[in-house]
Length: 102
Image 1: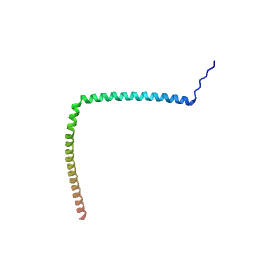
Image 2: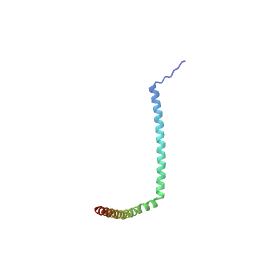
Image 3: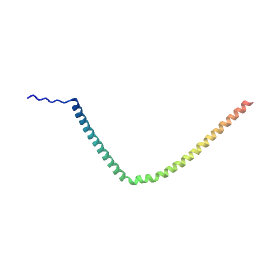
Image 4: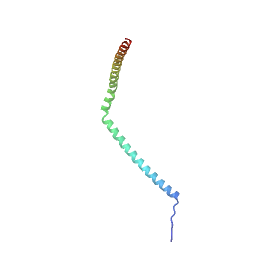
């Protein structure tokens, strides 16, 4: 007996597409498994360090208030320095104008 098996290009393409789809689904499952393991680890870490995290969250507003106060002081100091420098520049311009007048 002489038996022939014939596949069309469409059938080969569909078979390749199905194999690619199966591989993609398997890859997605593996990635999701890793994400779940990572989330479990993160939850465990957060639970272990809950006291430290709460302490940080409690002190952060105080630190931000200090930073805002220091920033305000620095801004006033910068403004004073700028005004002083501009006063010196104005005096030098005035002297130069007075020297040119004579």
